Each structure stands twice: as structure tokens, then as C-alpha cells.
Length: 308
Image (cartoon, rainbow, N blue to C red; front, side, top):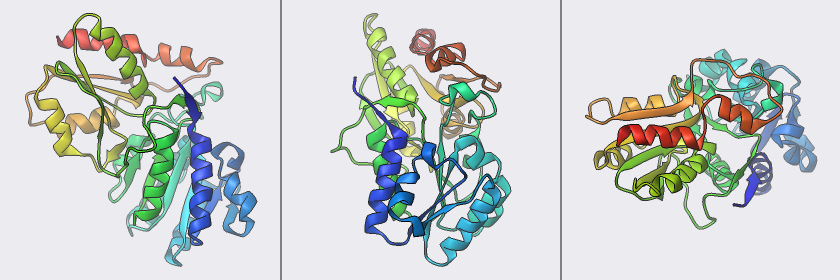
């Protein structure tokens, strides 16, 4: 399966949108060569602000720029973009509902080599709990580009998490993307898997394995964690023997938590695949790290068999 960089897709689409909309500006915390906001900075140096390793100041500056009519995109690694300026995001951006976009790169365990200090497996939980905040975790490079376009059109704060790894292309150019809507990747009638990011691909691999033992699996891409498409979540969970959630994130407060909350009044069996209540760690091999934390095709297959 063809793969592509989500970071490259983000940076190129941000530049593309900046060419069309002069109000778009980018701020970065000394990581523009990794977050790929450098593309905008190279073509529009007067619309790019290198803020240094001072994420709190960066977010506050972005809030001020939004009040002048600008559409600021704040960029850093996901762990720094959401953790270090939490107070500024909550008080200065989300509370007044300002039009600030936060792009968290190298999310999940994808910054394998830098270890726990650089791996963001709590970012969705942190951002999801803040009122007015929209949270998006795209499945591939194509959906990343569509998400950036949607963020520009959307009025209000948005958090976008972007993997450092190249991920398989799951969607097509023709498929639409709308904030707050899920998309059906594959159909089935025994189990529904709700997944996002890298775990959609692993769910597709699990679906192939489960088909060999006559277990039929539906896969739903939940790229918007907030606002959650509750109506469709309930519909896709209502006609199967059980559901699985799969995410490259802590099992506390992320996709699995959101789905469980949405289905709390339903009699539905739920199994969850995600990072247990642990920090990440360094590894020279991203795939080995995913395996260590149970974010694997085999784990999804095992959960499915438990539901049947």
C-alpha cells in the first residue's frame, strides 16, 4: 500500500491555503523544519513568526493575532503544543472562542527515538476536555490536506494531531471531509471497529485476518474526535455483536473514552485498543514500539475474537 507523509501534506496545504487567504499566518516554536510550517515561512517570511521555545508566548501571540482578523496556525510537536501552553489555550483561546488553529506534529508514539518527553499520548484527552475546542486526527496525508482546508473555513479553535510517520493512503481525493462526521472505510456485520490515525490501517489488516475465520468487520474512521458524530456512532454500533475502539493514544480520555461516553446508555459490548496508563519510551524502531504497547493487528484480532 502506498504511503505518504502527513507532515509534508500539512505543510504544503498550509502554504497552499496561505496563497489563497492573506490572513493566514504561522507561528512555530523552533521546530518548523519538523512541523513543516517552514514552507509557509520560506514563501511568506512576513507572515511567519519564529517564537522560539516559548509555547506559552506563541499561543498568546496567536490569540492576539486572531483578534486582528488573522487566522493563526500554531505549530509544534503535539506534546509541546498541547501540554506546555495548556493554560494559554484554555484561558486565552478556548474560553473567548478565538479563531486559533493548533497543529501538533509527531503525535502518539511516532517520535519513537526521542522517547517519553516527546511522545504525545495524552494530547487528545487534554484538548477534548476543553470547551469550544475541535479535535481532529486524520487517517492519511490526503485527509490531512482536507482537514487543513476545513480548519481554514471553520470559525473557532481547532486542534489537529499529525503523525511523524509516513502512513498508508486509505482515502481518495474524491472522498469528502467534514468536521464532525465519521466515514465508513469497510462494511461488515459482526463487529464494528472505530479507529483513527494509524490504527485505521491496522484495523484493515485485522479485518483481512478475521475474514479468514468468517468474522465480518465494519471499519469506521473517526477522524473528528470532537465534536463526535454520535448519531452515526450509535447507528454503526447498534447492529453488531460488539465494537472495538483503536487509537494511538492513551486509553484514558481519547477516542475510546469518547465512544464509550457516547454509548453509555446502550447495551453494547466494547473492547478497546490503545496505550495503557503509561508513558512512552525511546526506541529506534517505531513498529517495535507499537508492538510493545499493544497497538497491533494481532491485538485487534484478539479483541474481536473475545467479542464473538
